[in-house]
Image (spheres, rainbow, N blue to C red):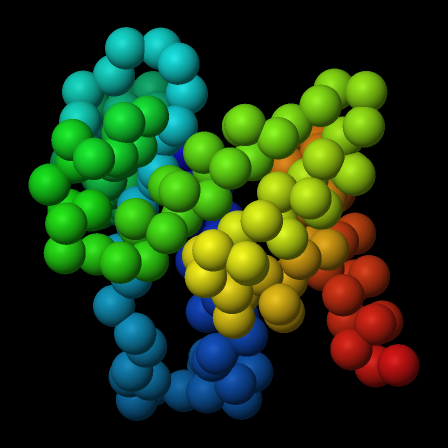
Length: 162
């Protein structure tokens, strides 16, 4: 997971930092990243834990590259202290509950679209789901892979262009 977060943040920074300034001596200021993963699986997990990129390195030496991902277990989000003061996280966890309750292996896309509609009716992540419903559906239908991620983004860009 930390490696995937590294990939994500690199892509985001590539979009933020103009090509010209990448080679300047002057420091170009970028936003501080913070990495979170919301776990909603069925395996027993701690409420909160940290994953480190350095755990994937061959040797634990004085490497200067580190990325820490905070994992929040939302399998039962009511027990998660942060959900009390983070409305977006609470909404996201509720959305995943709705997805799980409505998911059908035989009618994947239809059941996911239905879950998105239910969430929007409940006022859950409405702005985001209005803008990204297709991407959310595609990501939930297929297990994540980089090629799929790129294909979805290209498809969105085409639709935005229309």
